[in-house]
Length: 237
Image 1 (cartoon, rainbow, N blue to C red):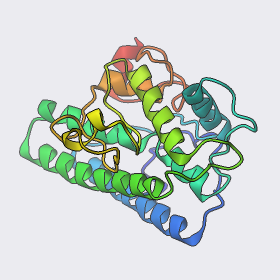
Image 2: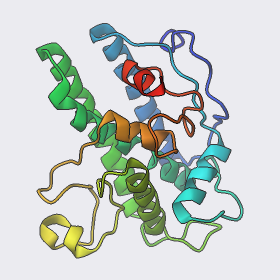
Image 3: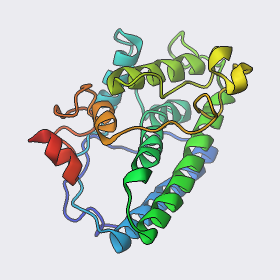
């Protein structure tokens, strides 16, 4: 859909991942759904030019290094195989999901609220598929490291909580029972709060996370030059 970026710059470093057929089918479906989301946004509320995005393996490697608190050796390669790719998919989509939940009270108009509900439904489903994929492999080591899939999800969720700087709003696929559903489970296929409701994040929290800086005023991470939306630009002034 070459018209949808509105002449925004191409992403940095994106390349085809080495995926098995199952994972490829999942990602192809999600990718086409995102095209539909952009088309729906454009026809309902309008869109703006795509900002510069850094989707390089080097950028993902830095995120995983930050999550573990030391450099992984060799550097994490998000495009290496299906498991590495799905762990990379764990990094961002959930942030968008809780962003939709946090945005909902500030949305005016029936058509716009209906759009948000439709987007949130599909984004929640995508996140659930990613989490279930990783949950099924939770005890498996992520080659070539001596960390399990559950370790990776816990570290990434911890990093997002740290960057968001608003307490626990993110949890890996395994947690301690006090945080589980009704304080009874270590299983955490779906991340939710004490009332088993979705967590929510403000635009500032989201920017702190996707910029990787912990500061909504300091771009970086996935957005080297900052995001393009009106709210994001206000923070960059």
